[in-house]
Length: 233
Image 1: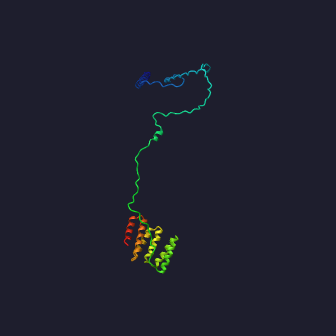
Image 2: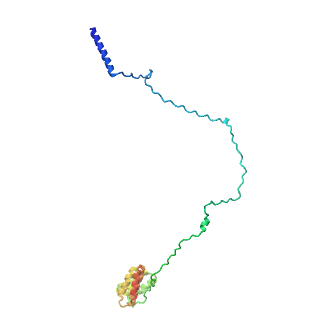
Image 3: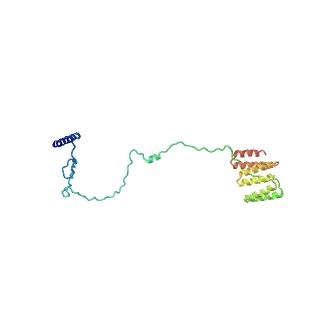
């Protein structure tokens, strides 16, 4: 019995020794606390601060600051003249030189055609009926006094009485021309020239009125053609 126990103990001892050889030796664990430090880390050495030089004592200063009184002030009475800098021309010499350049002459406007003659309305007409003559006289009187609206109304009433009277259309065209309505005056003057079949004097002045109305509208060519037609009578 003791021999078996001894055999078992020897075999366990050899088995444990074999296992320790298989895994190798392990380093011991670090010990914290008051015991010895196994792992230590060196701290970097701190550089010593440079010693500043002591300032010089004020009592040891040998230099002294000396002040002197200002001299007597003397005002400058004379005027100083500044000389011009060399290389810069004076302004007077530049302005005194005359500048020469091209001389342009404005051409005078030339009129290719002479201006149109002044317009003179017709004063004498053929005799009218008593009712129309009264309205025409009232229209002329209102026109001379400056009441163009009343003059126009009187002539329009006369035209309603005699709608084919060329003299009445000519008088109404003159009134529209005074009212600065040249387009309407041109149409009325054309109608007066159309209705004045045998009255050549009225036809001529009707076309002269047409020419004046066209010239007021800026149609100088049309005004010239109307004057040429008026000269045929």
